[in-house]
Image (cartoon, rainbow, N blue to C red; front, top):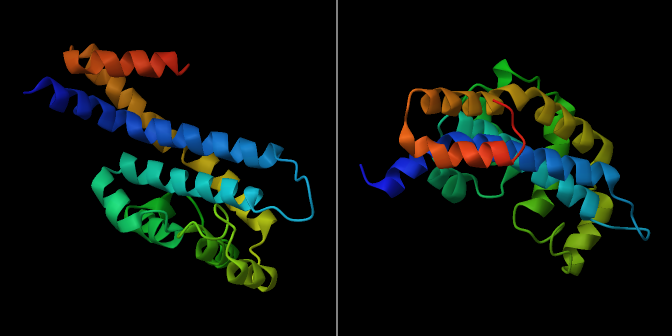
Length: 185
């Protein structure tokens, strides 16, 4: 087996861990963000990015190919949620109707990067004033996802550690990355 392919096999187990770690970082950034004026889309963007990364971390842990996440899911939070539900998300978390409703509102602005990330379209900003997602509901949903998906995503690192102990040489570089990230296995 070619060395690059073997390395990709090891990283396949790391992706859920790294995506989940990034989701936690975006959540913490959102919780610590202080707005400088009357309006800023930054809180929304940070929570949405964290939700996206949490759902993608779960899907990667469930062996959904990265190409599917890039091409089918993209930055569409509703698609990510539906795909995650098809792979057993509801066995781990309870999705209240309010979460779906606010996620749908936020997704309108988030998925095409025109509202929260590049807030330069006057029509989008005008619509935002009348259809604003609840920041507190997005925060609650995001926090719940990060917390509940922690175990699933970290189990991938345990699988990687087991392969390392079994003497899979292509795993060595991956283990160094995990240990460098401060993950105890």
